[in-house]
Image (cartoon, rainbow, N blue to C red; front, side):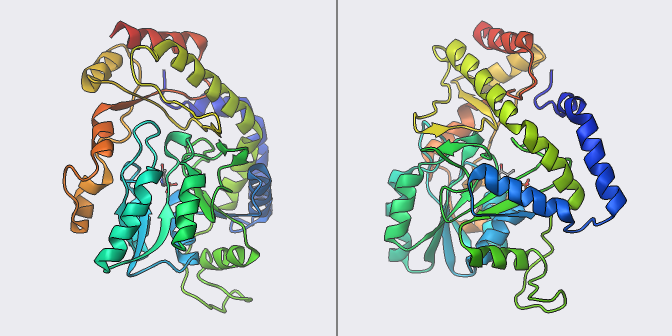
Amino acid sequence: MQFVDLKTQYQKIKKDIQSRVETVLEHGQFILGPEVNELERLLAEYCGAKHAIACSSGTDAIILALLAKSIGSGDAVLTSPFTFFATAEAVLRVGATPVFVDIARQSWNLDPDKLESTIKKIEKEGKLKPKAVMPVNLFGLPAEYEKINAVAAKYHLTVIEDAAQSFGAEYKGRRSGTLSDMAATSFFPAKPLGGYGDGGAVFCKSDADAEILKSLRMHGCGAHRYDHIRVGMNGRLDTLQAAILIEKLKIFPQEMQARTGIAALYNDALAKKVRVPIVPFHMKSAWAQYSIECDHRDKLVDHLREAKIPVMIYYPMPLHLQPALKSLGYKLGDFPVAEASAKHILSLPVHPYLKQTEIEAIIKAVLDF
Ligand SMILES: *Cc1c(COP(=O)(O)O)cnc(C)c1O
């Protein structure tokens, strides 16, 4: 059994992938070839976004979004401490400062009720200027955007979705990528829509932002290739990755459905014994991960690994306690919900190619424990 099964997926779409890759190898436009444009159009259409700008990774997508909004030195970006390191890393990379807001216990996402008090605290201290909120749609579940956007509007903050795990998710009938001012997603192989290497995309509403993002991902170019009107980066998506992602996007809706079905089976079977993920009525999760919480997490992990069931811990250490972020000045106890979740959480396989027998074995192993 595998935690994520990319081999079975490849066998299913092998011919189409190979023929797409072949086309790129033949035409030879490896950088910003026609497949990149085609993918961008398909991504925007799928999400209902005005623009999608493909780029080199999810981390670079966040960096590009921050740069496009001129967020940098002296600016505070409010975000969750319970996420992958890249969320805070990207903020620091552009010279800004991540300011953490604890998560809500049920969703593992930024707690909208703690947002305003944190903004007020930053303003009172006077060292940083609150500039943006970056909620993370952890495990594929959207954060509470209506509340977050309302608080952000009150303080004139930009909202950028870290949608690295939530491509395909929905909030009140709208897809992740369109839930705030901008969104950054990732095509890392293990994400809901994954390529065969690194990749990402930024979604935005305004034509002006789209122009800036395209310029930023290509060394800040202007009208001509060797005309540089801002300092950008090399943040492009390879044409080969775009070609692969175009084919993967075709089977994405079926895969979403399969993951949703598996999560429902887990919820039904496990809800009485462990804390299972609850998706509010107004949301749909992309089920990047299926995570549960239980009191004796480490013993359950040992038990499952002994039963040959692959499990992962996302995330064993919240960001405010990471050695690399020590200079931010946080300490143990600052974000009790994130800290408790890190101790109790584990993720079960939820990839779309799990067999019925495997799902049953996973459920049985958890219940046996
Ligand atoms: C994966 C991930 C990223 C980074 O994406 P990469 O494509 O690996 O650079 C950022 N934020 C979150 C929440 C992620 O899960």
